[in-house]
Amino acid sequence: MTAAASPPEVLRAPLVVEFPFTRSLGPVQSAFLTGLRERVVLGVRTTAGTVMVPPVEYDPVTAEEIRELVEVGATGTVTTWAWNGAPRPNQPLATPFAWVLVRLDGADTAILHALDAAGPEAVRTGMRVRIRWAEERTGAITDIACFEPHDDPEAAQATPYDGQFADAVTGIVAEARLDYTYSPGRSQTAYINALAEQRTVGERCPSCHKVYVPPRGACPTCGVATTDQVEVGPAGTVTTYCIVNIKAKNLDIEVPYVYAHIALDGADLALHGRIGGIPYDQVRMGLRVEPVWTKGGRHPDHYRPTGEPDADYDAYKELI
Image 1: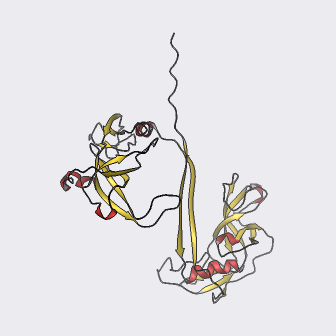
Image 2: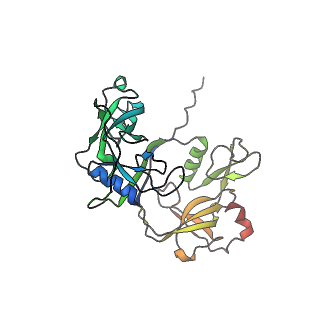
Image 3: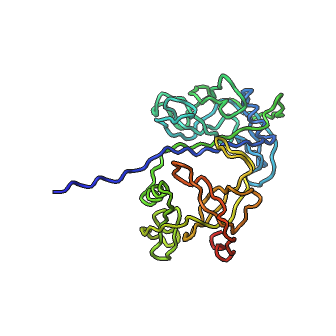
């Protein structure tokens, strides 16, 4: 009697995709965010007379620029909602709450935010709510801490507002972040394990015979499973590239540097890689390169020129 084979190790790793970027504000968005800092909610009147909150700078129907600001109420009516029983980090409230669309008094459109409620049984479409302002306000949507139930009837109407504030907010940093646990499938697990041995392994489509690196488990062209593993490289050809002049957060690489698409020998799909060992302004399409591994590294640190003559354009034009 033989012992059963142990199942293969399932790879897992935490992954964070983060892209904070700075954007400037036009006069409408500037007035809206500055108004929140001053506990004033501003909308904009469209060509047809509709009051939109949050405001936009161009009419969604006519595409005309619109600048007529109006003040609306801090109270409103829930138009629809969904209960969030397990808040994620950095959401408006740490305790369970409802996501709600609220049409503020005087507005014709609804704004999305959180409603602090005891439970889903305490929330209903048509209920009256009001803004709970943050104690410290900086000119951001988070100046509205959340909405809370409120029994007063609708009263406020949209009134003209000049949008003039002292020390107006003119720009914001928008932070986009996604945290999740990534688990590669069969194909990418084999690819990752091969990289740990300083090898690059792709998979060949049994129908069109193209070799994909990194492999995805199926051919994107034919839609059939790919199981035939093929070792490619290690050398390859730069098919196209860009020069990076802005230093990325937490990336210890001096700018400028070159990031390129590299078609490894034997592969029918180019992968990404940084080019080193050559001045950035000497990198070119067709440059022949090879991987450089650091001690203990699980992937190439960068690619450097092999010293071979440049590849002919016809040899890689289909991979650009």
